[in-house]
Length: 319
Ligand code: 8YV
Image (cartoon, rainbow, N blue to C red; front, side, top):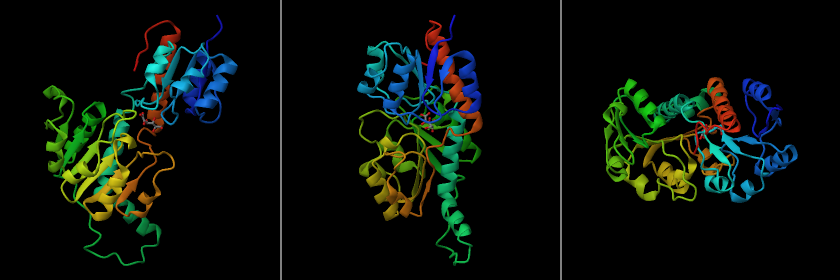
């Protein structure tokens, strides 16, 4: 029986490409394709599956442009807010994501941003790269001690819990809010706070771990930033759409926020360049999952989903 034809529409690590070619008749362009480019190649090759990721917006029209041969769109990401899942389902296309495999790396990056923002890692690094000659004035350049601080986690799913687990190693007090309280064995020692309004005033540091919801209003606004205590630190490894960036920039400029650590932005990759003018932000280019091990695992998870669906089984990670 001929191997089913699939389109891997984003660059994947060599091990993932090798497996795709071994198991499928895989079309592997050497660049990330946008939705239109994906449709062109999917039609040309009559593929049964598309592997893609969160940088590519698949709205109803882009899904409608895919050929009828497509049975699954497998995302290498856990997030699927870039995709009109209902439109795909209406067309009989399964949509999957890649949960679990990036939990640890995303939590690691959240900790990195917490530490970097508190300890002013970006500023210090820039001082070194400038030759360290300019005056380094105590006490104006002091950071904050993360140990012993109260960390608020907004969204206590897999990644939120992994952050709570790590924060305990830094002797932080961890509080969280979530749609509902978790069973105590999943709470990682964190205290449940029933609402955002109750959580925010208690946070020295706030870290977001909610999924993005297409079209939803941001949860971090002028009002919610104002509910954080003056001098709080804000971290986002979840989605830029959760944040009103004008409000964030104003809170950083005014000193209401001591600092922020940001991996995700409302517009990517052409993020708001006013952030670059602020010394109290530590920025990374949406790389929470970007390790050798995790990117392999994300690609393999997408291929596992493709293999399941094309073999007539239910998807492993349906969304
Ligand atoms: C991205 C992510 O896939 O999984 C998600 O939802 O946002 C990330 O893992 C990755 O950073 C590449 O864009």
